Image 1 (cartoon, one colour):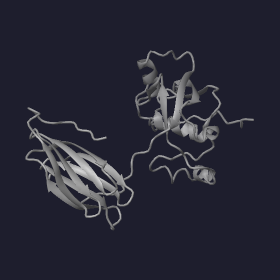
Image 2: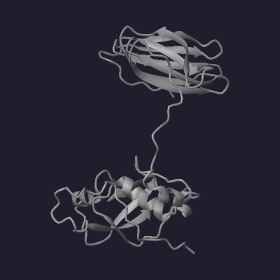
Image 3: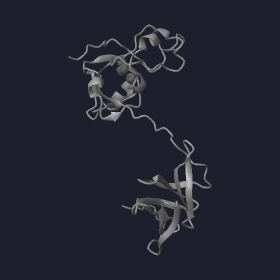
Image 4: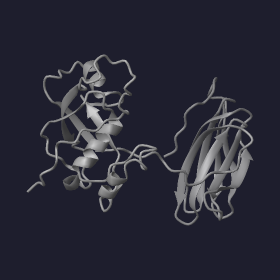
Length: 263
């Protein structure tokens, strides 16, 4: 049977207005909107532990994504992430959160659109009636990527890149630059650093596109197109970490080459 949850929670995204704010009657309650939380159909991992009953609850009309995420975490009996600077004033809440699973950031769909403004504003923009409970489909938010490696600063802008994995030599990252150079990188011995393995002047103009594919066990074929109106292919020897010219295709284009794909 589904666990009975406490539906009385009211969370807000913004700090409450100060007594000096001019909002008319200071004692007037903030407008509330009824919402039903529905776990998005595409969520398959841990679905049983993330699904909430769909009974409507009341939330502030001005609530935004972060506040709604806190509501869902509270209803799931997870820790609720505090705002910056609130930890000292909410020691009792911190004690209550001890032993709970960590909070999960959630995203929300209203009328099949990501919620990126206050709830009432979004509902009115979509032409939805507030007389009935709004259906909010929620799902775990995708976290921003974390940097794993970076190279030394290069002499010119990187305009294109492609990645290839070789079972024997590992990851290889190829870049094309505005200086017409192709550069090959792989993870070096220093943590979080890409090591440049080789570089070659491929074009007389900026490289606009690049594609790479394995050509045998120890060789990678790299194709580049440039503003110099030429298409060039190079081979990369995984054993010797060397780039060498394979072929030049010229005369077929009267303008910059902006797309190339090897398969």
